[in-house]
Image 1 (cartoon, helix red, strand yellow):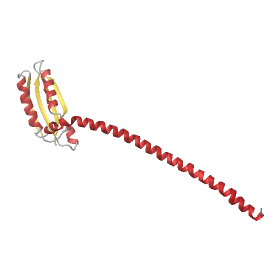
Image 2 (spheres, rainbow, N blue to C red; image 1 turned 90 degrees about the vertical axis):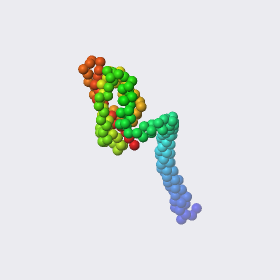
Image 3 (cartoon, rainbow, N blue to C red; image 1 turned 60 degrees about the horizontal axis):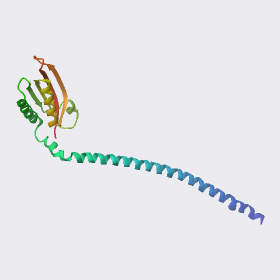
Length: 178
């Protein structure tokens, strides 16, 4: 072999291919790491998506189960809450005599208060007082909250009346409106 070609053959025949192979391996390892990170991130994103999708479907089923009641619930907002509560107490007083249950005061306020005052949702406050036996008061509040789920109890104050069997109650509700 010609001594002039010996250096060129060593450089281009041996060193250059070894450097190119080392460079290719280095780039391959670098990009493989990036691809693995991207793959793991996308796999985690997919797992999160599947979890959220399962939760969404469960919530959707719950909403579908409640859909028959939606029209009835939305009708609760048609009349003013004060009128409905007043009507409720008049009817409830007919079920008990005046020694067992009696509505003593009812003051609806159109201005929101308590929790209704700090939210953007339209609301009104209903202040009312009544006296009666524990069973009658408990039944009245239970039936009122069952018939009108848009009411939220703000405060209740109970005190004993003149008769030991009678309680005086002062109740404040927030009535959510449209």
